[in-house]
Length: 92
Picture 1: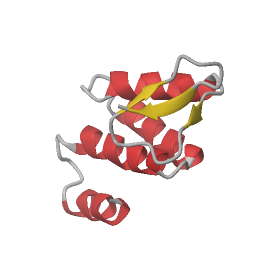
Picture 2: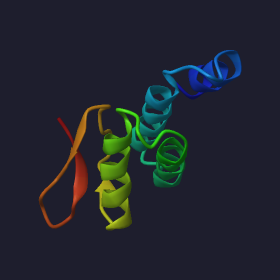
Picture 3: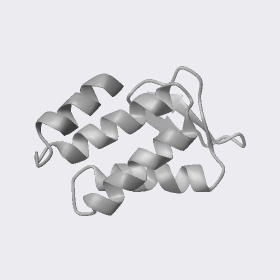
């Protein structure tokens, strides 16, 4: 996914699909448990495309991460936060 994302940025820097690609790239990092990269790409999305359809999803994930919630191992691209005390990200 990361290579496809980098290629997309180079070939289509002004594309209207950039918010969705930023979100997918961030979620691919979330899937591997890389919180720092997840947060970095979600924040890029929010800074560059605050009114996009992807922004509310990014906001929810950034907020949950800032509250100390953790990402579940092997999370799918479709995720929801647990309501348990561990506050991890679960597959849907």
